[in-house]
Length: 288
Ligand code: KIV
Image (tube, rainbow, N blue to C red; front, side):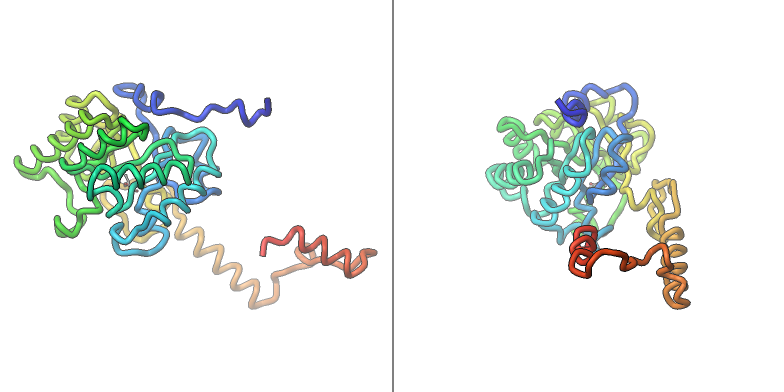
């Protein structure tokens, strides 16, 4: 048995067992090399439909397609071996009815190899969640601010600001848990509501802009690495990826323009190899 095959990927049972224990560490992931870096530290890697905004430059997640989720899901599975990988069901892939939800969820699982899917769960989604779970698809719910619904809400607005909204978010969370969701993301709600939901449901809650009262935390990785000029209030920046990238690209541009790059060390030399042999070797090493 190889060393690699001894590494056990986390399962839905590991995630469910974290209720009330050490907080679950979750981040979004969209590509293989980044997943490789995050995998040793994270319990859950979420291939979020936020990929549409932070990678593809879309104004919201509404334009994200199944094909995009599959491509990024496959990459994250290739780059991880330990974390539990969840792939978002994009807008329009599950709302029509339970059959549509199952066909698309099954496609995501078959074509990416992910362990679970996530559904932004308004109350109507409970039927879809139960249908999927009964048929072998673990589902993570998502309540509070639901980015796929921004066109109804009128923007990326915190939820649960009056009693009616609070009751709705609580009802959605309970419906998702009762329908069999193994965990629930709570996005953009005040800490007391996050606390009440976390106490009311028996599955782990994973907060994003929902206080420390949840059973775990998730952030969009590019936000917490500091790739953007602006981030929401709830994001803590752990790096300055934008600044670091700009510095590196500026230095590269200066070196190219001054011919300081490439230098001797970065240049192939013709030694004893015949031109034919050299081109074979160079071709093997090339990524282009
Ligand atoms: O798409 C996403 O990245 C998400 C997280 C914000 C939870 O749903």
